[in-house]
Length: 152
Image (cartoon, rainbow, N blue to C red; front, side, top):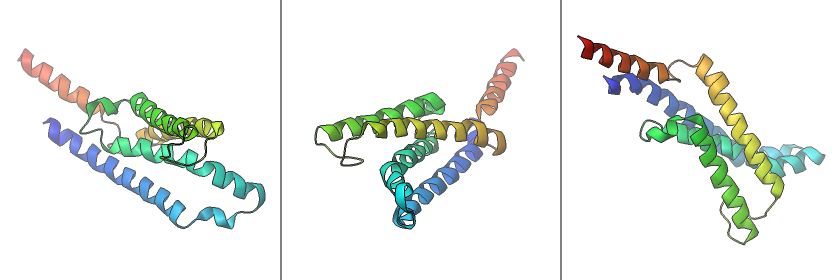
């Protein structure tokens, strides 16, 4: 019974996650920043990836909630993404490069803002307007049914 309840949730999370990751890849592949001028050009190349990569990482983790139960809480995903991105930024200061090559303390602020944007999209938009995004009710229904079956 549980397997059937989570199937539609898993499918929608996978589709949304892949679409977000493809959009981020397209933004980087088509080099959108080259069409900007002046300060907007500088801000885009300084901070756009620092905002966008945490969003993609958050929704990539959302795709794997089905396999890893601990990822079902939004704050766990947010904490993991922020910690990994911040660790990467701090390692740049010591000459180890993973997500970039220059250390900038403002990048950590942008990671935090990106994670907050991802959480807001998840909780305020997807949970409200996308069918089968939120599965907490389905788990409660399964638990209530199993508890009622014990009473019978």
